Length: 378
Image 1 (tube, one colour):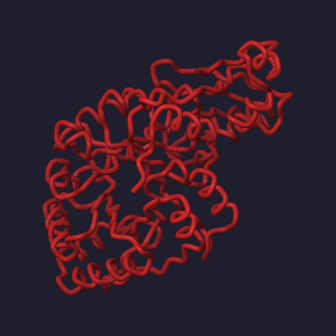
Image 2 (cartoon, rainbow, N blue to C red):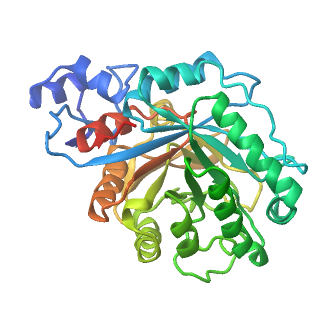
């Protein structure tokens, strides 16, 4: 259950009204300052999980930008590991010769083992910081390169004690659509005891135009893979106009189409753990919006004395504020928006939910995830 803060509310008055304590509300909602609330802010109220709640699988992509995961990254993952089925350190980029870029996971494997979380080898066609269609073509068509990818991937998996391989190949040329499927079929034959999963672009039709979509054949990929992660986010993105990152209507449209091509119990909903702060007036690419966590968004609303509004159609919170003579617009996630996604997940009987990515704090999500679902462990 959620409560939306009104003028004159305090955490103490809300706690008293609902028979709990301000300290409990602060803990559940990750509030650093119990004395400052924002009008329009959603507060999660404590609840006892339903013993008959459905079981799902959950995944967290873990990304870092240093040689070894920092203590901050490690701590963020440790804090949520109890709510995870899978952990996907992002990522091993495949080189032109089929070898993999090195990765130092730090203590992520130990955290996974302590919490019965399955680690996963993630493979990408990223080259020089961007997804490469020509690299993907080389991986799919050069037999020597392909064989090295198979061997190196299984070697890394054995080294890290996992039998799960995940591909995130994006911006594949339409001509390579069937080659991607064949690549995965051959990969499965090479490593028959492994689980195979993949990330897919958010499509609403089989022949949807656009570079992100055309290389992904939902039906064929669904047949060869154990499960897929549909990237149901980035409608609002850093280079686009201000809007919800994952508005419920488009998310529903994508997932309803997906389960016509792939069994629902093979489909994971992708979910962003971040929002964006746009500078107005919007101009394409100038400047790009800044990614922020829900916690940062709420702190920003506090600091700028901005009331939070909620878009009922998108099922997402937003607010506007001014800084240095410029207006800003912020869209993010809160208890209401994530509960709407959980409800859709249940309605469509999906396998589970996959979060991008670990660098953003969203305590309400993890509390509500546990209250709404049982998380399967491997």
